[in-house]
Length: 110
Image 1 (cartoon, rainbow, N blue to C red):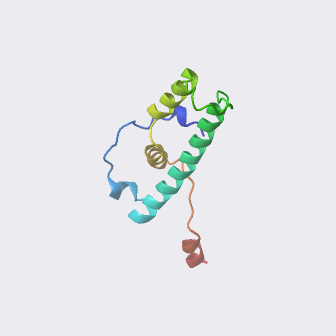
Image 2 (cartoon, rainbow, N blue to C red):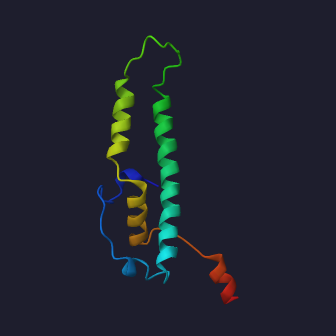
Image 3 (cartoon, helix red, strand yellow):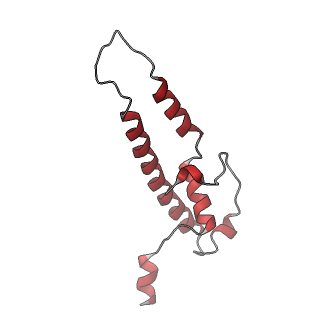
């Protein structure tokens, strides 16, 4: 997933929950789907950021000498400017890019 190229807004957007939950028929199920996707995106972003920051990490522990690493600061600022995982997940759900299924509903059909 390329969350860097997403067209999700960086600020909070008011959404029509009735229209958003028309696929599932349940507002709470829709919120649960978006929340689970947001958690997946959050873990992916965190792992990606930690991997990039690890390249610039210093492994000497000296309490007297604390210095700022410009590369680490720039990477952190970049990730701070990205849309939040909940906004990305909501945008993906709205665009129909999220696959979901409810095993309880599938059991009722059978």
